[in-house]
Image (cartoon, rainbow, N blue to C red; front, side, top):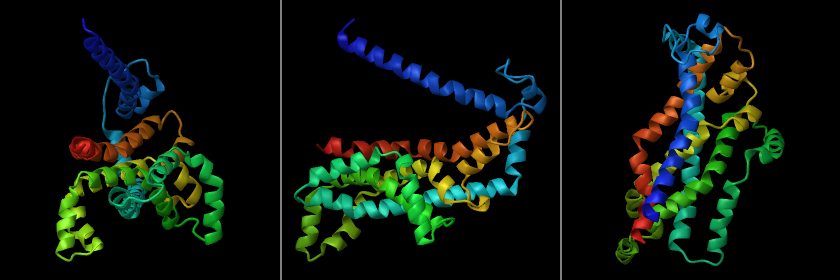
Length: 277
């Protein structure tokens, strides 16, 4: 067997191990979510419940508070993603079309910022938002979400802009169009797949955020679903474990569904620059 075949086999084997590693806990979560309270009391000896039921999902979805938490999470994550993309568009366009001193350092700096854990920012963020009077306000969480999602959005949009021929913009410029007009009427429509991909990835990142809303939002009526589930998990007993599992599944489904439905668009946007090169 050739080295290339061995390398491919090793890669597939590693991917298979990783898939099992992540799939097993998810499968147990599904198993718990479709159990009755009596089966939860008996423990997790059986992977497949004797009497699977969807009552846990009905109970969770019939709770008005849970629907409010879902709406809060959707509202905060979409607004934060929109802010991240809006801030990233001019920055990415400048990095793609304008040659300026320090451009490489700016792009590397954005990558470095992306590696900073939100844990490092919690104390200064709390004090800053408190001084501004923005605690317990959606605006504080949306602003932080936008700032955290902007670095990745800049990179994705730069790739999308790099794939668009500059000749199109030059032709528009010769016809008298200003740079902002060219950006709005030519570049952005052609980069819509990249914009959508940046928005989707930022939204998924925001949806899974826990620490930021947990620190900045103290009223339970303002909590997104991630914080609400954490609060519920701290008060569960054996009789409500199956409800917690059902709530967790419902919470992850929107992000997974959006990503799976639009994965082709995301992959296309990610490889656009490489294909052009």
